[in-house]
View 1 (cartoon, rainbow, N blue to C red):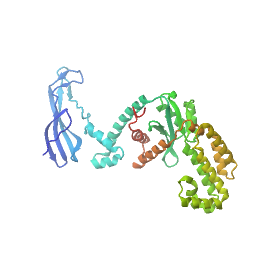
View 2 (spheres, rainbow, N blue to C red):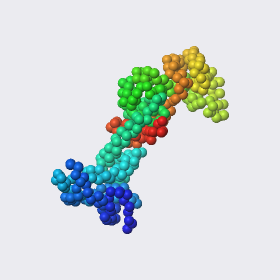
View 3 (cartoon, rainbow, N blue to C red):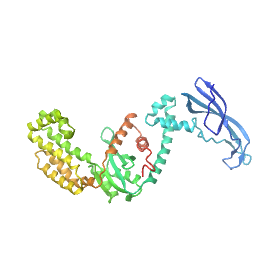
View 4 (cartoon, rainbow, N blue to C red):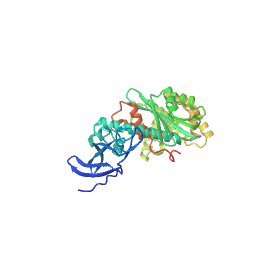
Length: 396
């Protein structure tokens, strides 16, 4: 039988054997003297010995069980009986610290049920181990992130659907560090205020906040960060215009299969697709107005400089208002109402692209477990898996 190096300095190996259920390694603590936890007096008087069976990291894909001979000492000073302390094994636990850490890492990117089944550990036990370690790591990461906050923070705020029936969670993200800072129930103004208040230590740190055109979020940001610049995500603005074109297309019944050609960017079309599009616009001259407005607005975001962008946006709004399509008139009114935060993009060129990608990852976390009944645990998972090692130098 091979000699196994345990890698736990506090123990010495007495005996090892290979049994039907895995490796059995008998160990005892190398220290022969313990300090009394009651009075602090050092003693070496052994009262009795007991054996604890503890599971450790596998070797050669075989489970490893440590049979730890735990000495119980009687204090010479106060006569109290106590057990020897173990650094690698928590009190009253049947798993070593490093095995618990290993199980936690396996649960990241997987489900507790799957890891429980694979390693033959009771689900409730593994659940307790995972969330115990997760809570500690979340506190450490939160403290590290708080210490790394600097002036000029850029925040992203968006919502994600967590259940059917319009049940949402508001997600707050540090756009520079590309990490989730927290989540809160629903997407109302009070919810956003609570989320921002819990995660932002100083209002003066926040320089820019990226939002969509959801009024409760704007109200919350203006209340908490009156001096911060609000930028409306350009993809939501462009989406508003493309939706207006799609509504205009629906007024022409024979064009059900032309949606892709009309909504896709002109520069991305193949030669045969462009010829087909030219035929459609020639056949329906009114629709060519809507298509021209869509492409003109896409050019707006390619503008260099705030003043030129302002002129182009105002020009587009006037053209859209004069168009024969109600959808473009409605879009023009919406853009006119949000004109200033839309133009702020040309002063602070940030978007919500990172948080949209993170939202996709959050949805995968939700699907992985077929949803979460306990939303606090769901938020904890999201924070740990969508924060990453963004403390210290990366956050800076």
